[in-house]
Image (cartoon, rainbow, N blue to C red; front, top):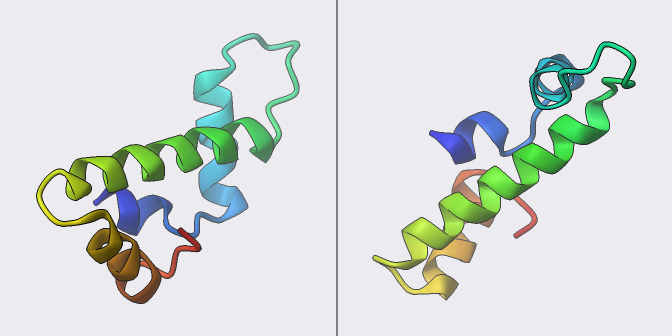
Length: 70
């Protein structure tokens, strides 16, 4: 689900993530922080899947099934 939700997230998705990760009202909650968080979530999901399948298989699935540049 993480790869589906954060495979190619829109700014509409990234902005609330940024606001959740950066709770300070003075901090600029642009999409950058959310993009970094989403990238780390994707990396972690790929690592978890790679424990079951080979890393090469997971990366190929990421490219074909989830449209990621893994």
